[in-house]
Each structure stands twice: as structure tokens, then as C-alpha cells.
View 1 (cartoon, rainbow, N blue to C red):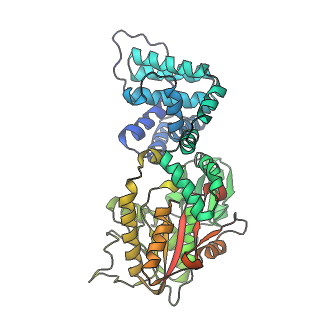
View 2 (view 1 turned 30 degrees about the vertical axis):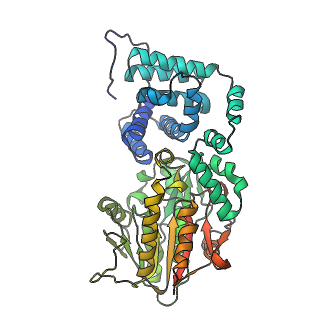
View 3 (view 1 turned 180 degrees about the horizontal axis):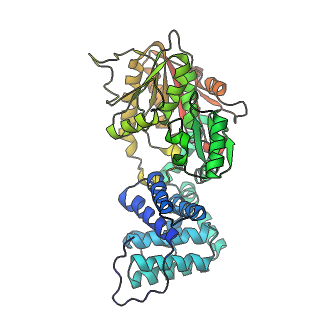
Length: 488
């Protein structure tokens, strides 16, 4: 990383180590340039390891430093503000990010205080001038002198409950409130809020999917264990899942060949429910209306193949459509198209309205259900973002239903538990008539492994049918919502 702004004649005391330098570079890309951590970090790690700059232990350190800092951003900023006389927003962004990295090491990682401070200051000397580097040193040393019990007591003394939980668990306050409402409406378990918030801050395991008919799940587990030297375990929900403690899935031959992929168990179960819901009559043509980046489409196609069914995988964005093509390249029953899902099925098109036996609408959403994997998203989203998303979801749902033939099944999926994106959308669609909510929870229990944590459904309007909401703290998966509806 190029150095900037050094004072003339500055005498270097220490040189930053490469892992911290790399972590800072990735954090800069994510926090200042809008990159996604789950893309920027693996790319940086692969390049550094290819150049011989990192070993496996260093890579793990970088990953924890990046993801841990992003997850803890709100709490770290609250803590740092106690040691800075000016608002953090008035400081040089580079200095703020260095302070966050240093604070995460002091507060949350098994790094001795002196090492965390000195290494961060060495890095600061490469990035900023002498004065700001000394400022970083002073703030972090002040932090190391603070009594933890005092900090905990002051946090507990925040009067407003949601504000206190937002700081303690490092989430925006509006999301904390939305999570509690979701727990109450989906499961009547608002008292599990802190369990959910804590789980949302845990580093998730890497989850693989063995696409049925392409690779056996046991063979995939052996491949991951042998080639990556990592511990593996079967999934808690999906019979096709392999949980990896560490390692880069992209380096596995089965993944490179498209026989397997990286896919959270919640997403796997959503596809399995969509494939397992009972349709009336034929079952030959399926549609994934919002298919990018392709993991769910690939599993759907693999599940469709034994039934003799084919899948149309639609994606509105060309670059994401290419990702769908890559994800499904090992399957010969997939037709990838690039179109606006809200207009699919118009006059003169290959698939008119009412053509499909199964339709999956995995609509764009707030992403509140996958923030443990994309922690930067919690700081980017705003409540007002929901307005456009809700309108888009409703339009896609209506079009998805119109594309479903009578007797066919529409499966609505979101990676969010937000009530407005889930239960309210389903209720609005049911109010328009022509649909029946199926017992989605019963379908889920049928397709999940026998030992799966209990999947409890939420009753639909009038007590007819159920929807399913998966939870990190209960099921270990992302927060997937699934609802199966039959068109009448």
C-alpha cells in the first residue's frame, strides 16, 4: 500500500506487519470505497498467499480483524468516543479506521495491549503524518488504561433500551427494533432478542452445498477436509450441506467445476422447500425469477433434474446473469435469461403468463438476514431504503404469481425477517385473491434432515397455512423467510 503524507525527515521507528497492512487496505475498500467484504477480503487473501506474504494463521488473523472490526463498528465507535474530545466524524477517516482496528484488537482479540497499540501505530506511520500517528497512539493507550467494569457500567446505564442494545450488540437502533418486532410477529418470542443479536455477531462457518446428482455430500466433505486441512461437519438443516471450519471454497475442484458451491443452509432449505411443495398436475417447468448470483438456481436445477423438469433462471442484471451461467454450468436443464422480472411473460415471449409449474421469487431485500456474512451492510442500510424495496417485492410477487399456472406453486423467499418484507407482503398478496397459503412449515420439516432444530411455522391469515422464518440463534442459518402459495 502506498504511503501518503509523511513528514519530511521522519525517522521510522517500526514497520507495519503485512497482515495488519492488508486488513487496513481491505477495510478502506469496504468503508470508504463501497466494496463488499465477502468479495474484497477473499480476493486480497488469495493474492497475498499466492505472493507468499501470508500463511494460514496470518489469513485467519486478517479475516478476524476485518470482519470483527466491521461487526463491532457501532460499539467500537461508542467506546472510542469516550477517549476523543471531538466527534469521530470530524477526524481523518484513515485515522478513524486505524483506531477502530486497534480498538478491536484491544477489546476483542487475544492480542496483548502493547502489541495492539504499537502495531497499529506502526501502521499509522505508513498511512498518515507524524501528528495523527501520535494521536492514534494516545487514544489507544488511553483505551488500554480504561477499567473494563467502568465501560460496561456506562454502557448499561444508557437509559433507552433499544439504544443500549444497539451499542452493546453493535447494530443500528432501527434494526434492533425491527428484529424485536420480527421475533414477536413470526414466533411470539421477543424475549430472544439479545440471543439473536449476539448470534448475528458470531463469525459464520463456511457452508458448502453438494448439488445432488453432481457430487456426493460425503465425497465433498472428504475433499474439503483433505485439500484444505479443515474440520468438516454435516449440516444442521440440509442433507446437501457441508460445514467447514475454515478455508476458501473456490479452491476446491468440485466448486471450480460447478458440482458444488458455497451456499448458506437457509438458502439451501429455501430451494428444497420450493422444490418439495406439492403442485397439482404436471411438474415440468420451473422459474427462478430473481436468480442472481446463481447458488439457489443451481440447487433448484439439480433438484428438478430427477423429475425431468427444467429451470428458467432469470436475472435482470447482465453481470449477475453471467454469474448464474457460471453457477449452473454443470447442469443441462437450465436456461439462463436476462430480463426485468416484472415484465417477463409479456405478449410474444417464449413463456407467456401462466406457463410455470413452480416459480421462486427470491426478491431483492434489505439483507437483514445475512448481516453476519456481510457486516458492512448493517451500516449502509437506512430505514427509508425499505420503501423502494417493498414496492419492488410486491411487483415481483404479483408477476411471479401471474407466471404460475393454476395449481402451480409460487415460493416467496427473502433473506430478511423484517415484517414489512415478509408477513405483510404475503398478507397483501393473499388479500388480492387467487392464492392459497400452503403449510410451508410442514414442507420444511419434510425436506430438512431428521435431526434439524425444530421449524415452527407462523399461521397465515385466518389460520390457513403457515410461513417459515429461520433464525441464526435457533437454526444456525441466515434469517431466511419462506412462504409457499398455490395459485387458484
